[in-house]
Length: 168
Image (cartoon, rainbow, N blue to C red; front, side, top):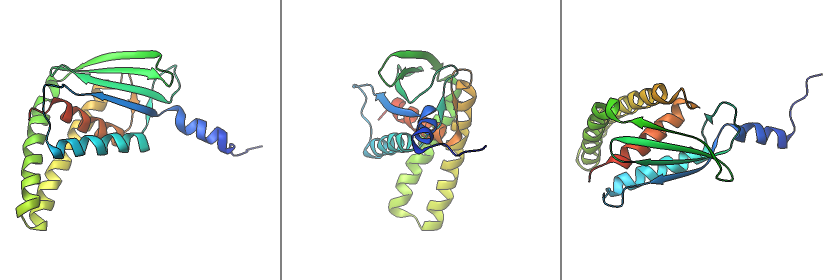
């Protein structure tokens, strides 16, 4: 007989493939803009609010640590008690063009918010979103042998990577 899972079981199923904690280590020698700080805060909040993140042979919720040396992003995945599960390094070279273009469009977007018409802002935002999607898709393809994730989670992680390597 088909029975729907109890609330406790449903919660466990939902939390099984999620990031429960996220720790982003920024370079203390780099300054980030107010807009970048805001983007980072929103991305972290959104990831913790709703995400899909799964490791083969391990159940979550996971604690994800991210840091950079400006050439690589280091992913350190731990269980909820901070015991290491896996870690890997991803080179940023394949992302350089997308990130450079994304930064330029974001700068144009923030300037446009102050001075342009809503239709001009919308056009710039569409370009920004397209680059963001391109970055998210590339991220999924680069980490898929380590982590299974969805596009919304990948988009938010791409935002964090952009903030982590920002040179302001």
